[in-house]
Length: 168
Image (tube, rainbow, N blue to C red; front, side, top):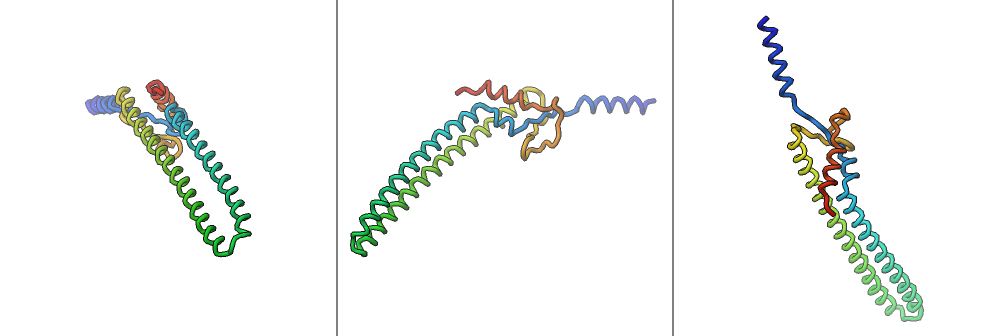
């Protein structure tokens, strides 16, 4: 009889100490988080502007190339070769400048997205502490949750909290 009572007491203690675990679908969270959506929209505008600039410069350079080809017909061969080499250098310089602008834009975007991810992690940690969770796991593509019940899915609650805290 004492063994049964002791066993029930141990089971009761273990049951009371059960860890509270939840998970968040990382993909859904990031796709629905307004700050991330706004950052992507801002960078799309900047990328579109850079594409228009590249197209405009490219078009002007092509016109200049056609003009040069027409002039080169009437130039002495050596002079045409020299000017062609200078023209090529100009084209390479323009290409490098545009590539550098593109890389700067990508780097700036990456820094901002890294900041968003860092902020989201901190907010999830705060949410977990405030709501008594021992663990909040990451799910979705590449996540560590292969299965979880809907009752343990915190994605909508965390997205709602993040979007409520986000100020444009």
